Length: 618
Image (cartoon, rainbow, N blue to C red; front, side, top):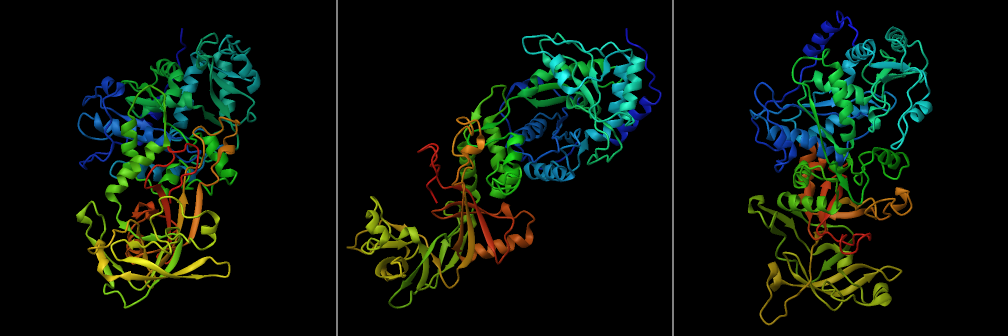
């Protein structure tokens, strides 16, 4: 039978918490930008009403940066909430699950707030968060309530002994010798833990459930551990003990009036513990309906890793340049790379919500990005590895050429691109039959672009023919002297002439702006990194980045970037399709005089042509 426990100091604290820590509904009439999910087992189960609205939460641990797996969870909690709201209002909390001061920092908190705001939009998340740490005092009162009612006890065993006592999947656990200590003695010990009177790691508080349960999560799990003199990023050194997630999670859900705690499938086995905590504390918790935990499948992606431990290893080993390295699947990384919230919304909506675990090809995300940017990205000319072209004869009659900014969308208008007798083209668009590359292997089959004997068309301009090749001391071409046919301007093929197959892009040399191109590719060369050697670092793709510092772009790109940099706090939200190259985003380190572009995706997916090999495009 449960002992009576005085709540004279606890109940006022509860009311204070409810007044100072309300749920954070964001009412908005803004058109829904969040993803719409197909009908699923969650939407079939929930039935919100004005008296019992749907309230969800996203509770990240501030011990690392959010990644694409978190993006799915965020969008499900926000998207399903708004999609199934009884009144069209969003009620989703972002809660910092900050129960481990050893691994948490305020920098992680700031990055989480920034990433969530970017992903769902400021109209749905204004940066306001709740935290588990703001409820630390009340959580300790909950622990004392359980102790007083013989539902929790202090265990002085070391962690290895506790682990051994829990048993295995085939062997029941062994009760701790401290399991039947009387409540008064346990309360005294727990208060010593709270007061910092015992050393770190010397004792823990365990819940008294069932050591013979087939569910190991119910074998007297640890609820509190001692961490004396360990500063917390939010509460400083006010507390000497810290709750475990399985204990604090259901309690704070109840305090925040969460109706549905939506978790990934790895928490399915924890649900009986979630329900046990709520049931045993029900006389002590607020009287409104207690939350329900429901689980959905997590996001698994090929050609990358979503383990926080592995991501930390990549950063700390300097395999990548930091948490926002554009090759990483962190939200900071994919944002800097140039992926858009719209792309992630569409991707997660297509995956849907289910209980079936599956692994999605990273190419599916890249294909969504291509479709997204094909509609929204203005076009432009960039030459990544330039060779100079000098046109002979009279100066071209066109000093600028009007070119559609988006051939598929007239609303983008036209751009005027300067044109003169001095141009840059891609070095790869000229095959030097008479030079080192020609002697090494001859003209590649199907090469239709420029050679000493084969003309090519400058896109939107003239057909040119090589007349002479200027070479350096090693016989490599450094400049092409070409003639041009004035009658071929704008795609015209004069009567009697054979149509030229090869069409190449160009940049006017006198007005060209230097820029740096970061050719990013997948960070790993295999679908399941580490599957062969058990070391995922063995499968890092050595060709995941190529830096091209000598690129040049047309003036309209430079002016657009300069304007964007002066007006936007998010440089990477500016995208282009560099014709014949791929889709690119402006890097956050860019300045008007030092433009840096990150390749988001190539124009086509070539990974599926030869799996595991380098993407050849670009």
